[in-house]
Image 1 (cartoon, rainbow, N blue to C red):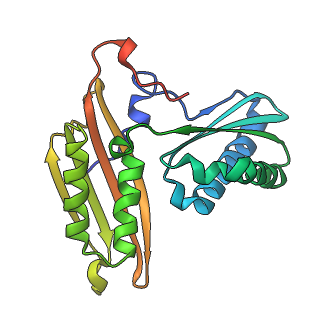
Image 2 (cartoon, rainbow, N blue to C red; image 1 turned 90 degrees about the vertical axis):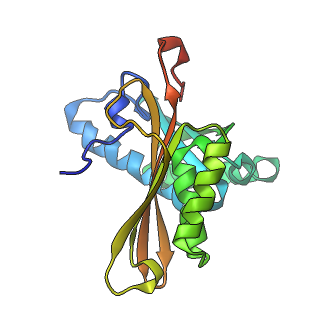
Length: 218
């Protein structure tokens, strides 16, 4: 059958919290979900070089949204003297028609964030680096940073082949069904002239035996 469970969603309530925190009447839920997706897509599309790991969204009141961006290079999002973040705030307010407040957090260990690992491999593939070499180098760097296991899978027209295929590399162990295992997951896409190549990454950062050790994302 294959893997059908999202590693992050599988651990919500155990090791993870929701990336969108709000409550709304049933009739407003589809609208809020669509707005959240617009915000995330806009930020990730316009700040690819910033290394966006997560975009956390909170709504305390309907008129105001708080957006927290976890980035490996927060300076790109903030800009000189905060000019870039003011511009982003204005653009998001025009996009969704609500008041937006943006906060930026720096990712302390980007090598252990699966979305950033996937983005790194995707950037290398876009720069015409051999996919196998890109995966091998990235896995070596992630394991050197202290990960207990990492798995990377890429799918698409690798090397410009006519028939798409999938290849995978793995080192260490990545327990997919163990709830106490802190497994991060990320997906990125490499836009090549042959088409889109998808990159998936799983990073196993260790087992959490106490609730006090749970990674806070808010």
